[in-house]
Picture (cartoon, rainbow, N blue to C red):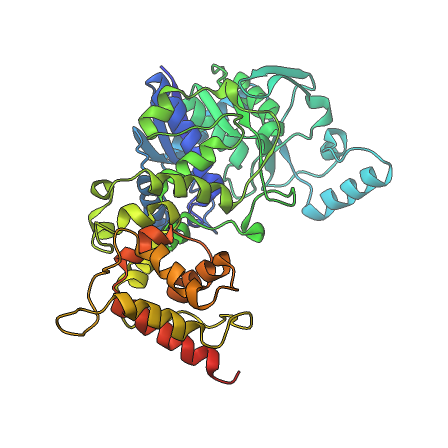
Length: 458
């Protein structure tokens, strides 16, 4: 049975890189009908906080992910000690007694001699013993080969690697060894992670062999880079999932975007649909550039394909049913929905400053208002109508009426100007679809305000 794991450290909220690892593991498990294990790597007492465990769980559930098993590394301490004793008994770990200062001097000497900075076992044996050693794992100094499910055939010569520290002076395990021990204990069959862990694979393979365990399949997906080609991180604008949630990003768009990175074809559909078509072999070996625009494109497509009935109750409450079909092709963030609702219904909404009226006749707004009132007056009451009487296309009738007064203006300029005055946007839904949803009274009010703003001194 396929068993995979996602192993975050409770040192903060999950970010997009974490989400990518979790999503790919969950998709792989679902595709094979296997188990998705959540392991909380909480052995770093200085940085881990219990409250972040709940945050991690909430972030994963928000993404729509569920897990079959969950455990914390700290609960496996006795198992770690037992397995460490196995390594001691077989002679695969050995005590070291030098100080950090001595290690720094040795490293500098090797670099000065143009040698790779490796731990020197011979020098290590010359250091006087004391009661508080730390421990290293003795690498075999042989080639380790594996067939990576994404990267293909891989070879690593451990003669070029330094014996890794596996136990600190205080008796706590290093990440490398504790992770191996948990993978062995939980019978993990596939380890799916980023390509930045490739160099650890040979070391961890040897550790598993030393413990007499079955070696899992390895899969290292390409790195997520920013637009400058650097690793995607907080410095390049990466945000936590909590921040993305607060900004109005859809979890389904995030899942699709992080699963899409590294694929040459477009994926779509819900989690079950993506899982049914999921294959690690389709991922590129090359690193891929990523930005929030990748999520925005997917999210815009998701909104555009939603009927009003598909919206969540809180989103439905923020927009009129008749307005949704008109604006849904122009939504990225959830906040855009409320803004379009306000633009179309709030008589007190005022367009932001910044309208350039230098290319317009001074009486443009007056002409637009007069053209509006010419056809939007009730014969019975003489008051502006609540609905347009220009039917079925009030937009083109209105633009044409303005053009009769100002024939020298280009029609495109008139249309763009009216859109900007009414919506404060250069783009959006077709105005022939949007204008009928704007009450004439609101339109006139906005034109009057814009007229006053254009005439007022800057």
